Length: 431
Image (tube, rainbow, N blue to C red; front, side):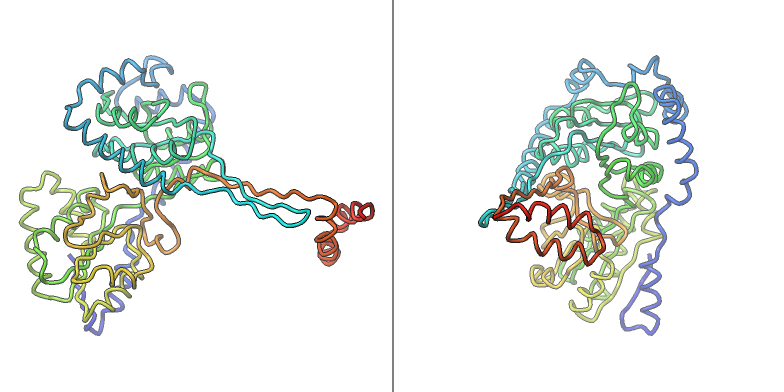
């Protein structure tokens, strides 16, 4: 764990090094990913079968076997404990409600002879990638599929890797609950390529969303333009701002909740109490002795974890805006006041009774968030990722007469004569 203090002469250099911590590994796999995409484009389903056998350790009998059948889904869902199904239902209800409140309204402006407007419409088809390697994430299914369904997307195709051919029943239950229309047991860059370019078995989609490993992230980067994507997701990160009145174990667990995702995840504590920082660090070490994913969380904490000691909360806000964290927890006496000074964060969790983990599952806002300081310019997943805007203009002769001359003048100024003539030709015949 790195320890920084804003009072130290070398703080700025140390903080810049923390900002520049290279945790994104997609550049290391770009060549391999390009090869996989080219193979899928050239060989289609045959490539998917070969790549699935190579990477997921099972060989589909045919291309048809890549699709999970309705019977398989029902059989898998039947094995899910009732308590887990109820928890999924609670989460889905809250997520759907929050995203339904985001739906925008069409715009229309009217003036004599002229109407302008903007119309919202859903994408035709979306591809959802669900990780299936180090852990299974039914919560990611809900977070990615439900906004698409709320937006009105008709086709939601899901790809999920099935190592050794094993399906995760809770993931399938979440997919059924969220309205996923088709499920394929394909993972990695090959799944992204299939969703982007299509094969005989998998029709192409318009946008691909969902997190994955470095290969998945790089594949999304390479297919962008052919299809839309949500983001290039990097390793998870959390920033916890806490004063010394908090329970150090609670803060330690909040930090480890992100560290256990991945060895490249980053957990940072900002506090104004040096003794409290020490108690949190000790609590982290204590939890790592019993945490099931201690090897992953411990590696993350050792390589990328940090505690920053600040003079006051104004300094904390300034550093937070520079870090632009994916997840931000504020556990200070007046969290709302401090949050008001923070401009850049993917999602914020206010108060000592609001751990980030509730946002991962049941709070309602989306847990797919900008990483790697991209919260400076990017936002979390929402219904807007599954909608597009079309503007429109309607004019009659009087409306064209009112604004047409200005258009002709500007067209001539730009040297685009046909532009101007297409307007002036009509103006010549208007009253």
